[in-house]
Image (cartoon, rainbow, N blue to C red; front, side):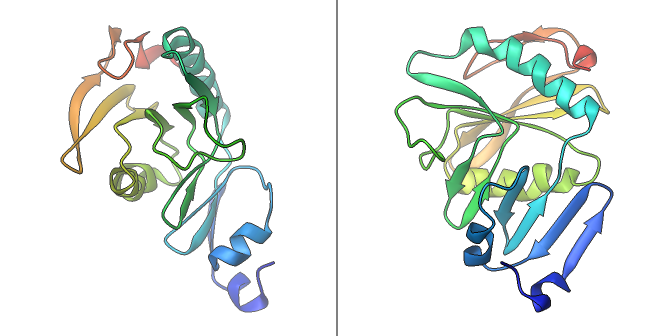
Length: 182
């Protein structure tokens, strides 16, 4: 468990806690809900109602389009290097490990939270690219947008930005409306 020195370095915002700790201390936490580990910090950020509603709407929209040999997973884990992520949604190979994906998923969908927008827009975007994630969707429920990013030569390139009803481009074509997710 984290020691007293670690706990004195806790950074908090509304519904967000970032605690500096070693990877060993992070692993000792076990199956704590809504936590990730990157940049030497355990990040805890439970979703609000709008976030949960958007996640459910997207799950229902994406589920019929998941390619054979894959699963659509809610808040399941992906480990890349020394970072441990729990994306809102991801499409991962069905034949992977039971506890956490280690190979890049086909797609990760993150719904921006007011308390840590920069993590999804900057930190995770960079780490997901470094981990080889081929497709990354960022949903901003405040701005009513869905941005589709594709990894090209190690960098995410914006392929599409939906601001109303439309059909997403790769890796799955999904009819959705970011203005109506919540």
